[in-house]
Length: 256
Image (cartoon, rainbow, N blue to C red; front, side, top):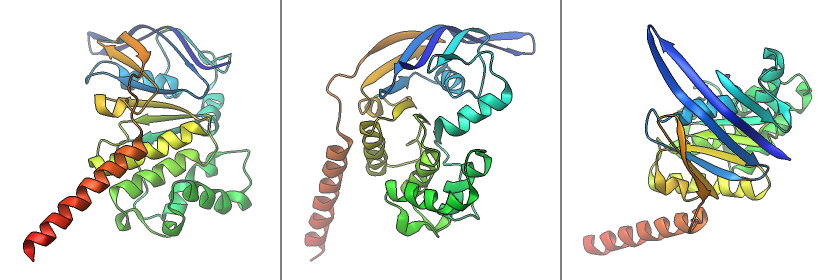
């Protein structure tokens, strides 16, 4: 069964008397376990599309089905349950609470999950942090962690309710190349475990880590095809680390 099925999706905004057609008849199917990159320049409609997929916004026209159930007619409480239980969100800005520990940030969504018992929160949070390699940082606050570690905390928070889908909006936008590849290692590993990943990015290099790329322009889908010569994030991370090591060793020998 398809995880996501969009047909004829349109989204129109009104800014005063100006009509802005952010999406113009998008058809898109994403099957369970896919890793899809949605690309496009600023204003192409990619973030609007992600907001609709994530049940953060509703289309002006068209239909959206999630696991065979029509989303269009769902009430606010049902949409909130889907956002909290079925979909995990990762954003460019991390969106962590600055005075809360990593563990507290990760377990925050559980407070809004009506199916969870409070007694299990800590254990689930530690498990999620362990999945992203940060179990030993669970008592650290965001200002005590690097940008890459903060983003991994954000990913752990997205994983806390065991979602079927992760939506990542420019998740490496604030990170350097090495840390970006480290984050993409994590996404590829999660995808190998069967989690559907939808990555929104304007970077063509980042899209090469996905299995399929969808390109938007002016609210229209202009390309939808498998990724050729897909990159391994773990290999890229090792290559960058190796280059850094050679550079540092070279500089050390010059200083001597």
